[in-house]
Image 1 (tube, rainbow, N blue to C red):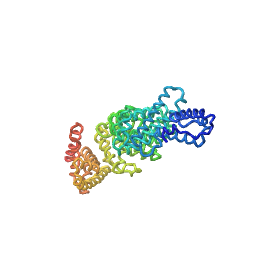
Image 2 (cartoon, rainbow, N blue to C red):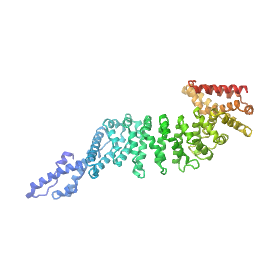
Image 3 (cartoon, one colour):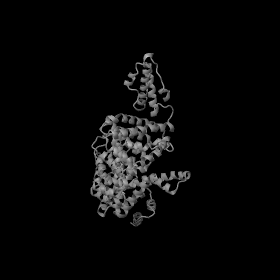
Image 4 (tube, helix red, strand yellow):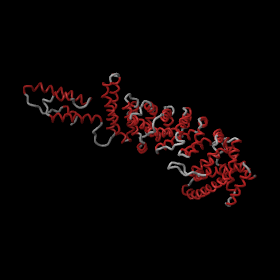
Length: 563
């Protein structure tokens, strides 16, 4: 039965000839009022049903209510058969926009009387819930963008009623699911429209008013972070808005909040790591926001205690990842030094907890390169050599599934010692070289042990790559990168240390090296060839630092030959 039939529907009438004309007039008035209520406020109210009860049977009243409900569902987009198409979507959006406008009008007209707009907000919330069906048809997202619905949804994120804002967040989180967007052509138009509408800034403003002591609002925070993650995976440039949009500041505040560990704190650490990695401006902003201190404070909890759950362990790893990325910026290394980050990492290495793996990675980033000179000298002053060399002498077993492997551990330790040799001042450097003469040159023996281990790995990698190069037609650069991953990088660092301590240390160090090489029937030429290749691949000498490093390696080779 369509609208016209419903409006002309006549129930069974009781035969009352004396009052026939009067009863017909009452019925026409009642039906007209019923149609208006059905379009605006739902099914007929009991008062109207009672007014015609003397001329309608119970069965007739039930039929009227059912037809009116069908009409209302049809107008709101519910109750439609078949998959969602463009026509149904436009009809649904029309109903949604009408409810948005109606709610705005009533709020403006009756700002101090919630009773006047309460019903419209219930309708609006239902309209937002109905739009979840659109997430099942991402191919229709361009239509959604064309109709301007994205702007309406973004406006609802700032709605005075947080329930409506949270419902909208839930909808957007579902609509931006990465798998859906990547599989369907044109679906990414939604992401572009959201970014253009400054979704990051709007979401942050909404996050600032949510109270995580309430379950609904806690879910709203989690879904908001889910939107950030979805957008960043589809369009990484959205991370550039994290600083200006206030997201970085909110994430730091959330990590610093004195709340029990929960899923939202884990998610905040993950989003922070995503925003920092690969975005230098975000690293700079994080440093200016005292973010280095915040990260160190959060990590300090784990210097003597392991995370009690796998989720909290994941958060700790996210914080370490973020700190490592931040230390790629020179200014942040100075903040790390002033914030006593070296002391904290040194304590973590001594305590032998799960945080030791992350501390080792952070130290490697903090000390490497010419910008790490101050940290290198400070590390020696705080007796860091007493911590790093036991790890050099004996590689600990892997901690759990996410811990460093033995090869990764050895790579970081050797890299740290290499950075110390390159950057330390004469006094600190002499203390470092003297370590290789202690206990009958045991550290030299360990150095040769690592040399032979990784030389064997590199030879095996070279053999495997010979076949791959023919099959995959690999370039020289690709072959070199694969060789580095196959152990060449660690071998280069080991041989650099060997070359340096032999050329600049006491003669007994070189004698020990040559003795072990002879016992193993090995040649000094192998070490020289490895270091020449290392020097030639440092770069094209376009920078002064690269040229100086190349000259230094060649100079060490000359000294090694002449001593």
